[in-house]
Image (cartoon, rainbow, N blue to C red; front, side, top):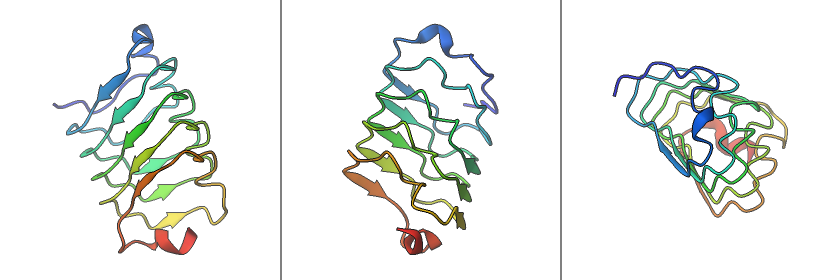
Length: 130
């Protein structure tokens, strides 16, 4: 695949979607409303892209999401509340990213009370924030 961007609301007409695989594309950023109205989505795979930053607006509407794969990107920054509305998330893959900075508060992982599996690399600075 060669997707380099997904426009805001491009996926809004498929609100019943439960699984979305966007891995192995050329995505380097997400728009604030890329996943708007995907309230039923349970699985999202964004692995093997070129994403660099996560913020609180990217996943805010994915309230039913159970599995999120962000592995093998170029994620450097994960800002506070990036996963805030993901109350049903059980598995988060964020390994194989050059994470160098997290906002230094306990808000980064806020809302992940149901998280059972959290895959992070052991050689990043992430460990000092957990």
